[in-house]
Image (cartoon, rainbow, N blue to C red):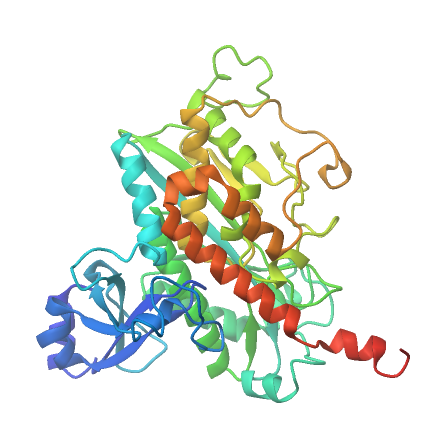
Length: 456
């Protein structure tokens, strides 16, 4: 939606509210609502402001100590919020409402480097200098429950009823029962210019997947966070609840966010070659030298950048053998035990990263993939032959971190991360992870009570 179109909608009274939002470190949208006429008069051109603590709070909105970016000592001032008018769109599931996403800026007009959109912008600038454009897409899975969010909260999230009684991967019968909601999501997203390709039942009870079309990383990340927000709001309007937790139940599969990515140059897919890369007799599939270098960089560096794929305590409970989530570094043509799967032909030729969970912040996950892949190009690495077999049980393969604490320490020690993102960005996200890990260590869980309350 262009500003001129918004102005027409304000005049004919079909839009009266504009949500001004920005993604926080968790990928949540935070912001405020403006009268649409005031937005046109003031905010569209001059922006607005938000307390800088928005980047240094936890999920409970508690201000956290130890950040150089924002703290009690400096009084928690404001960041400027600059609307990116290319993101302006109608919100069809909210009456009379539009939304625009913002970048966080310092008072002097410079980007807040630690903000997720800034982190991704920096990596996109790097590949643009090399003459490349990136295209990507994210596939999001979620669980659908029959309870409302409020009733789930009141029940302590115990004994929730999935929308199906059995596993529904590719099923048509049970998803038909969920179709009123799924249709509202597909159509609402498309009307909001988040074009949806398809929806389907996923492997577990009540689990669904919706895919939207590919594009350049920043617009796709914007669509991704708007999609998650919208799915929750539409489900709530239907008296149901969804979760994008990476592992919502110990006995069920996790929620993935598979990321598809390719690099393009002068209108052509730079990953594609009709023949195996020159001198690479081990190549089992067509693929350019650039592709093999990029994939090799992902293989080498993904473990130390895993915090950007798996940002929560819960994320690491998804990485289990036989769970459809990868645990070790391997690539294949079509093997879902591996972390990377190669898909498509010619224009559609791309790699699929199966490591991120649905809880990943897309801006950070895309940025991590670009940083790792381009490191492989600089270092002239090669991805080696395609893996064959069950990667879950192959102890020779390098594994992913097994906990948030381990991932944070790997990122902290990563020379690549500090070179690609800068010390300030790395320190910021490592500190967030350490504080989250400490909060979990301090908590007394239901598991502990059930195990120890009577019998210890």
